Length: 227
Image (tube, rainbow, N blue to C red):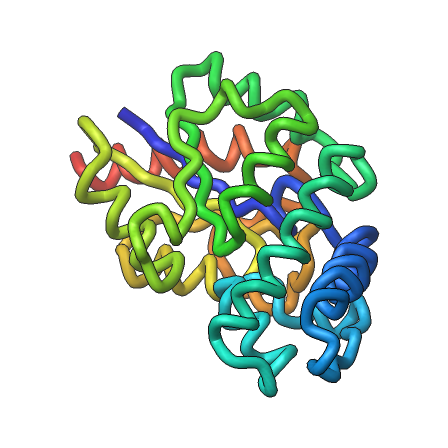
């Protein structure tokens, strides 16, 4: 059985049009309940530089003055705001995603999510564009108390039934490293947030439409090497 694990932001979806607004709204609501906190409102550019690492780390870096408990509370507020904006389709679904995901599903591939984002965010992206039912697992790091995507892919390798091949698809260096550390093929999405990070990869998709052919090439390559 062949499983394909997709990163979300920068691979299926681009949150950059709404993430600044979500953080601003979340911070405003947080300050209503915690007026003693003096928080800097990060720009979209500041936030997007960190997208790809685990979300708890993003908040720790953006708001170092907050305790862990207050950082988690702020995270909750911002996540709710972001989820609402995503469900309103305020962000951008990459061209080809809504056509290619059903195509991969119909070919018999088992589709997974492999995101460092919160479950609420992952679910909102897939729900907004009616993609949820194509995925066999929407696993978030917090579901199994996993620290990062490397551990998530290791968890998949260990627990997925009849997993002959697992392919990681993503746009950032952390996606590439997670695949490498688990000895998995990696498809680098050059249309995502930082193509310089993955420009040297063997398998590169310049658009989402190229992914089915790359998957077939990877599988054929595996079959040749196993002869």
